[in-house]
Length: 412
Image (cartoon, rainbow, N blue to C red; front, side, top):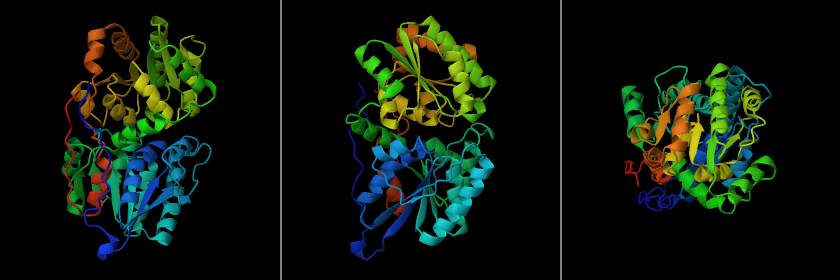
């Protein structure tokens, strides 16, 4: 059983930044638009709320709608400004133009002391650019992730590279991320790099606590979770997939492999919370609909999804966040991508890149369902990404306080 990290809570101490000492309030505009951003910023926002002399201001671009709302409710986040920018069938260019203009106008009016962004979405790039236009410093949470492939993932790889040129605080989750930033010489532009750990692990620990009080949803997802509770020995194969670079034939190959897995292992239950994008939903339902041991559900809220992860036997995904969370839960992961900006868990032995190749995916899943020693070797909790104290380090860095950098712990 894992003994690291210990049960942690973010520090509430500001260690010196205190309005009572004559220092002014620091207003931080936490800007997000998607579910992953809100999840990973939630611990930092909570930590900011504990700090004397810090005022968190929540700005939502509305890049996502349905997927974002449950996260805001779970973590009790209330945006002060909701720009509601999402439109049906929106293009990247259209969203980018609307977001830069709306955020630039907002930052010009509210004048935050800093803008805080997370990750690699269109919102991140646009918020960083809008802040730059007003000479407002930017803190980039989860900075420095790289695949060194321009179009993989698309458009995220270039979003985070461009945001790095605009950021002041580069809050790198791992030493590899710091090394990538050093190689790009971001310090020449006044950037400050700190290895904080990934706030997604903070959110995972917090989410596991909140999920205990969370009621399962109605409908297909709730029925599926109830089925798993009634049959605790049934092996769950949890699947996610939504990336743009998978649309078309790559996703078709993944779906063919999933169908073969379900047919070859009737004792297992394949659960796929299907993304609402028609480029995903159509092919997935065509390939897997009607299989007795495949459940295609609506997208799962964060609390429900981490409960599914904790219950799973193995996970098949193209998600970056799942690549970080699942190793901490001791869940083997097959990643349906050819590249990853999160190599640490691959090197640690908890994640395998199988790409979007039908045979590689089928063989990897089949082995994890039949080779118990192999499964046990992968199913060990690993913490290459965080120890649950990243949020405190992020705030310390922004406030100019000493930062005790994150170092990964051993597998349990």
